Image 1: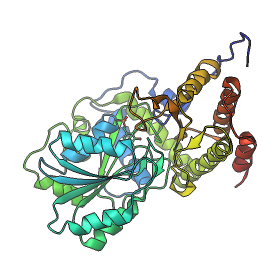
Image 2: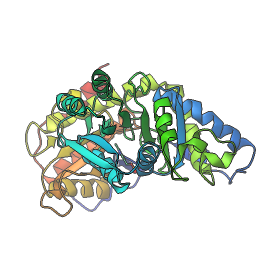
Image 3: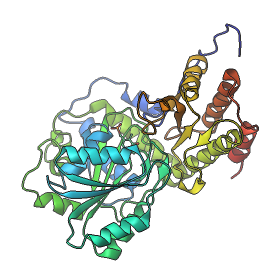
Image 4: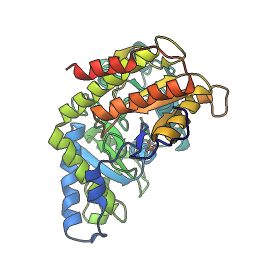
Length: 402
Ligand SMILES: *Cc1c(COP(=O)(O)O)cnc(C)c1O
């Protein structure tokens, strides 16, 4: 790859774990004049979003839409169910669980983190012990991140419900599906989840700006029992609006709603089960290459066990400064942007430049996965980074296999 020929022109590819690639259909749906927000098409169209969001979350319960990112949805879920002094239990497999616990602490809620590190899923036995020990039911909610995007661990949310039920413990079960909704199997009602938070810019393929909080009757009852509630985050008027503006606590996110409508149409046309299966097959393709590269040289997958890996994001370690050098080279020369490592080393610490992540969530298909892998393979060769052989061959074989 020497010489001065610039090969970065062409369509660029942002392969980071959110925001994800926005489909042309979504962009086109957003490219329009500002609509009337008091009556007409926007008002009617917004009502159609609710049942389709419920379908994707596999729930018959309510959903509130916020003009926010995932952090806003985190805060909304806490504001509607808990009050200062309450205790929540946060089993952690990465930075996002810690982030949600910090959000709770900022609201005066006591957050007890069970930290299982950055390489392992929840230890269900230890969680069960802690729940069983809470005989006077001080723990008001368990906050579980389904896919922790920093580590790329996928956790077993249904097992948390099993633990609470086995102990007869009334704590609410809350799940963060910001990285998993529209990528991985998630069954809100069948898994007994009381509150689920998500956002639009990952599996839902819309530019950042919409947060979602799904809540069932138990969670609604917790909301009713609170002495007061933030007017802005209150989910009651948003889920049951008497006036259109109540959906959004003010002006509607007009263009995002059209984008979301187009994205939901795409997901339903493909079928949610197929969407999950597509993510699984593309993940196997990406893992096949990563495992081959890792057979020699410095690259390591953050999660060695395939069964514990998310299908939406892959976290990798290559050592400092190679992670950053690889990302910079791919962006400058190939128009390919990989994700930074998150939560694996402190910013500015010696190993901070040693990590990177691949986003494979949302609007991604086989040629994009192969292009991503081919780009990384090229980067290794251009930078002289040692790596195991046969990665692209292994990836093509995995992609071809049904
Ligand atoms: C992206 C992400 C968040 C944060 O979402 P923002 O939109 O960046 O606020 C929280 N949790 C998980 C699992 C995520 O992937």
